[in-house]
Length: 426
Image (cartoon, rainbow, N blue to C red; front, side, top):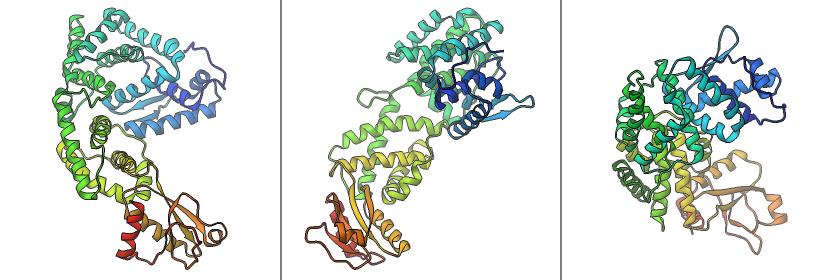
């Protein structure tokens, strides 16, 4: 039974409670029930059950895992060994920020107790030895790990020892194997494997070295200025081709193409690993991008096809949506550093107004801020000062001082489209 002191109910936020819920589910020899969660997190049973539901939904979306309720009412995380480890990688790092007291007082000692109970050699999980091992890997990678990353790695390597002892080694697909083995991190991971072997531990499976390489890859911060591995050069070339394709499709240019390429490098170096290893991201963005910036999204998706072919990966709409946002942001930098505001004057035909708004969004790759204003309010107040264009399907008089006004007919004719685009992209 747990002996953790319970904080008052107001002490923990919902993210902190979910984090502690998930970390508890990873600990060896722990029975996790709603009653135990309620006591540990200082909440009543109903909130504890809701925390489990919220945590289950989150890890299903991001890590393809589920939380099962067993016959005795306790909980267990279900999924592949690889997904389980990648999920803990995220939540343990998060826990060091959100609930360090829980990590120090409960997670760490319970982990060490589990290692001792299994009879694993103390030298394998001794903090001093682990610190030296992490430092050695850092030198191999020419990388300096910060204090929090070192703390994380010490704990995470102990968890990997437990998993390996129990025969729970991650499985990798052929593309995943090739990816991990071609990175510099694969050789650094060999230092850990050698350390385990020297301590008379059962021979680590080759997949353990692949996973440890992935672990170091996930901790890496891409640096477009200094990264020089063969895979980094390949990525920069692929990004250059994508930008060139985007430029050809859109007819638009970027004054600081290198700055755009650097930002895409930082983003895509991580997106490649998320996509290859099945790590999800927030799924609310693509729908919003498609609705607000349909032409930008289509152009990005088309420019992205060569990149997908190069790496043999089908990127999700969520990932492509983030790339579209980056392209859109750099297009904005070419103009006014803000969205162009379009005023749509409304009347009594909602369907027609929605069609006009959609056509307006189809005309340009630049982000638009389309604001609705009734004809009556427009005649009383005029247009906002920041409006660049007024569009309406209804007849109305134009004030003396006003942005350009276009009486739209559906579908918009070529002349109207050209004039609107010229105003918005000026």
